[in-house]
Every structure is written in structure tokens, then in C-alpha cells.
Image 1 (tube, rainbow, N blue to C red):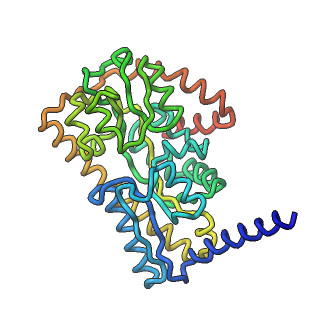
Image 2: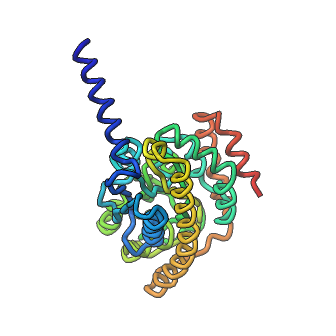
Image 3: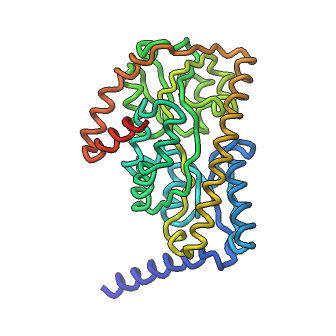
Length: 329
């Protein structure tokens, strides 16, 4: 019993030390995680965020974002921010669903009508509800970033109907929803780290993947997967998140300062994202990518009914949230 008590006190002291060391009055520089390369829209916006923190706090709050995933994989980084090993990060809500089931609603295929619809949902009460669920898991969402609309690309042939995916090995993010999405169309879903996709496409470990224009272009996936089919099946927001212990240690004034800076960086990121997406599309088309627009998405949407049914069977408490998102004008 005495040993257990000592261990408990040691753990409490360590946790308290991490929170105190993260307090804005301390010299410790906040560390932030980002998967993207330095010239990516997300990266530029994150650098603007940390610049604003330093300037507006007169140097009391200093932070640095480590780009290109150098602080670990996304699932690991999410866990590290929850535990306080990393102070903040910019995460896609796809992998977030493994930790925060409520966040999975935005990963349902075709849940959003378009990018503007996603913005209206996430910037309103529904976004606040998702944020509250994340806070219960140790993550405070400061702002919502864009990650574009995700479509399928592969090395075999164009995709016009769900049947065109039959038998294809498709890389997806590590989320059961995405596995179910591909399998509902007859494909073989292969979860793997983003950093492994290029080599896997090149060697035939997978036949294709799904992502947005900038990711497809910036990683050179277009060199080994020449067919890009504009299904736009997923429009998944991303979040700038901070460790809850660190957030709670801030004064109300500093909390407002941090959140305002994050939201201003989101405005910048969305602008840069739209510009980069258009530039990326032009670049890959000029390189000979065979692009096709999917005119009739009804077949794809109908194929997703088993995915929705399975999700709501597992999370019946989220049915209302799904309905609210679909009903948002």
C-alpha cells in the first residue's frame, strides 16, 4: 500500500510539473505538431498562429510548430497532446474519431454537401458540441481548418461508379468508417500511415488512395497513380487543438488571446487552401493526370447506407447530431 501511495504521489507530481512547466509565465516554449511540409497552407497558417501568440503576449507565450510529422505519426501525436507531451497540434478529424467518437460524424461519407456547408456546420453550435466532446478527452479545439474534399485516385482506371472500385486495394486513414466506406463499394481497404503511401503505390502494395488535390500533388502521388476521379466523398475538417491541462492553466485573457489567434489563422488557412487546391489541380493535370468528374453521386451515396446503419447502431446517441448536420442550410 505504501509503495502504491508513493507511486501515486510521484505520478501526480509529474503531471503537476508538466502543467506548471507549460504555464505561459514560464520560459518553456510550446511545441506543436503538424504533418505537412513547411510550405503547405496548414503549415503557413500554423506559423502565423505562433507568430501572433508571441506578438500579442509581448513574448510571454512562445511556441513553435514542428512540421513534416517530425514529432511522430498523427495517432501518436494526438495521444501526446492529450497527455501533455506535445502542447498543441493540427489534426485531421478522421483519425480523431478513434479517440473521440463524436468527432466521427464529420467522417461519414457525403455528410457535408460542399465546403461552404462544412464551414457553416463547424463554425456554429454543432462545432461547439464536437469541441466539448474533444475536451472530455483532454483536447481543446481552438479553430477549424480546411482539408478540402477527398476523392479517389489509382493506377488502374477511372472511377465512374462504385462498381469500378471492386477488387482494388485502396489506402485509407486509420478509421473503421473509411474501411467500411471502401468495402461497401467492393474495394479492399488498407489502413496505413500517410508517409508510406507513395512507395506502396509505386510497388503495387495498394492500387490507389483517396485524398485532396494538394496532398495528391505535394506528395507526388500523381506520378504513380495517374487516374483521379472527383468523387468528393469526404469533406473532413481539421482542428488546431491544445492540451486541456495547458489550456486550463491559462488566464481567461490569455485563453481569449490564444483562441483569437487560432481563429484568425483559420481564416488565413482557408484562403491559402483554396488557392493551393486550384494550383495543385492545374499542376497535376499539366503533368498528364487523367481526371474525370463523377456526375452522378447518387449511386455512391446509396452505397453508403450500410456505413451509416453500422455507425448509428454503434453510436445511437449520435443520430440526432447526424440529422442536425444534414438539416443545416
